[in-house]
Amino acid sequence: MANNSLGALDRAFAALSDPTRRAMLMRLEEERELTVSDLGRPLTIKLPTVLKHLDVLSAAGLVSREKQGRTVKVRLAPDPLKAAVDWLNRYERFWTPSLDRLVEVAEARESEAQAAALKDDA
Amino acid sequence: MTSVTLVRQIRARPSTVFDLLSTAEGLTAWWGPDDLPVLSAEADVRVGGRFRVRFRSIDGAEHECAGEFLAVEPPVRIAMSWRWTSGGEPEERDGVSRLELRVRATETGSELTLVHAALRNAASEASHRGGWGGALDKLQALLEQQL
Image 1: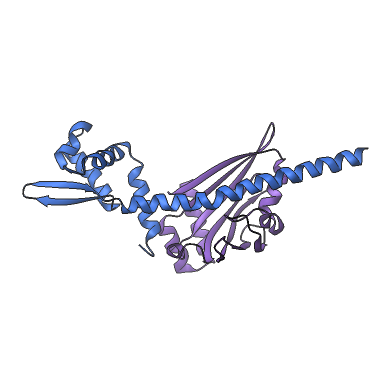
Image 2: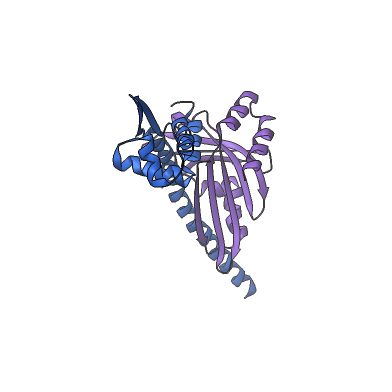
């Protein structure tokens, strides 16, 4: 995923921005493998809509589809999701301690400035 | 768009906080994931000016991130493009992201919001084709459409 990691991430996040698609992914996480019609059934949406959502999920690499005879089996493909979560974790790990230190330094400088101002007034 | 948002309440005036975001000396005081001193920091704080921060992580490796200021509005907002110029994450070596810090006055001092966003692929590709000059104008236009 070397050079294309951000593009893959964007597709994964765009795919995840829709509640129907998230519901589909959650079911696939529980069931491991489902047919297209099984996947649509509890969501009360029509087959073409199910297929459209599946296209988005496939393009993002979040699911894989495999034709078995007359049915298509859908499975979860967790790699892009993992890349997205890794990106978030990485920058959260970078910024959380940085910001903690920033708060400390800003508050120390503010106290110093206030102490200096009090001294000037006296 | 993939992004990380972090918010902090700070008992300090917005101008005190903004100084830490907009001077090389200020950035040196807090930047970096580990509790280690920043090795060097440069910041030409104006729209189009560049920044560069070099730091060491706890494993001894040196990292450098750099970019260009996209917005400078003291004491409320500063935004910059961001990329790793050494170290960092190898798979992101070619990726440009965007960092924005916003400061809002509160009753007790300031509220600081940090947003670090990975850019859309099209935008980062455009910026690479054109290099760091005019492409950044395009990049900025794209970013502003997304806000």
